[in-house]
Amino acid sequence: MKAIQFAGPGGPEQIAEVDIPTPEPGAGQIAITVRYAGLNFAEVLARRGAPGYAPGWPYVPGMEVGGEVAALGAGVAGFEVGDQVVAFTVGGGGLAETVVTEAGLAARVPDKLELERAVAVPLTWTTAVALVQNTHITAADRVLVTGATGGVGDALAAVLSLRAPRSLVGATSPNSASVLADGYRRAVRDAGFAAAAREANDGELFDVVLESIGGDVAAASFGVLAPRGRFVSYGAAAGQPDPAAPSFGDLRRNNWTTSGFSISNLARGDAGAAGELIAAVFALVEGGLTLPAPRVVGWDQAIEAHIAQAEGRSPGKTVVAVRG
Ligand SMILES: NC(=O)c1ccc[n+]([C@@H]2O[C@H](COP(=O)([O-])OP(=O)(O)OC[C@H]3O[C@@H](n4cnc5c(N)ncnc54)[C@H](OP(=O)(O)O)[C@@H]3O)[C@@H](O)[C@H]2O)c1
Image 1 (cartoon, rainbow, N blue to C red):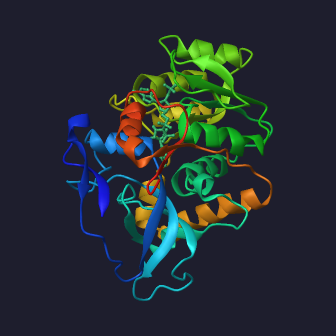
Image 2 (image 1 turned 90 degrees about the horizontal axis):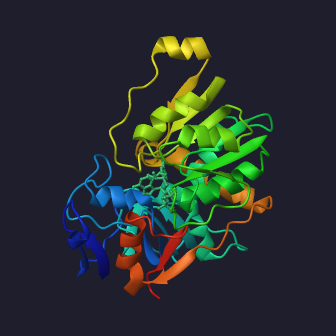
């Protein structure tokens, strides 16, 4: 079968289309005929060799897919061959004609939802829902999202709109290729980021910071966190070393809560918990949440779309039509 493969850690020279054997499901797994595969920043980090992303080399990227169940492994209940499903392919492999995943990380797609929209549910939308749930955001909160564009940024705007926070500020790089989703007030993420974020928030501090840039931006975020504030680190897109965390003394002085979130590490340790998040997103869709249509590119554009995402030229969520 055809697949996109990273030969090893490095630059775009590591990427190629290859022909590899079609995988067979083991016990507790299903094989999926892939129609669509979502592109995620995690694949950029994997290719660059960031620790914890690619489990080994060569690596076939693709962590969220939509398609039909092609085969069931031993002991799998709840699916039939031909079911239309999405899945969180946490070990990669989704940018291929067939992928194998743990059955617990797959879910049937609700009838009314188009597959090309649903494909971003298992990783992107679950992350947004988990971040909002874990920080218990209410209408009283002033919220800052430091990486507000792209797949997760767009999903956060939609999920947060259901909680109607008092304010929502989204940071973008000065020349971001993406359009900021409705609901965000914009703050430019440059050297003056903290001041810009606060200015966009009518001069006030933030009750919640959802942080995915890392390094200097993560450090600066504590300068705009209000007493009793909640801070979550869920990414490090800038590729800078993590800054020193606040001391226990700082936490006590400010009544701050700091935490981290990784949907991949959650899924690796507890597929059921990740599966519950997929179900939670579908429940929101059932209740009226609209998942925006992603940008769909054909298989021939998949490598270029991944490179564009790595270079910050990618406008929002991109999905590859693997058989298109
Ligand atoms: N912890 C989790 O469970 C989890 C799950 C999904 C994603 N994530 C993280 O969430 C972030 C967004 O992921 P995504 O898949 O939605 O990505 P995406 O659609 O490609 O969006 C990329 C985001 O990262 C920013 N960015 C890209 N390159 C950057 C760089 N070199 N320096 C600083 N910022 C950069 C972009 O900001 P501008 O547009 O403003 O330039 C944009 O906000 C990533 O950090 C990813 O690792 C975490």
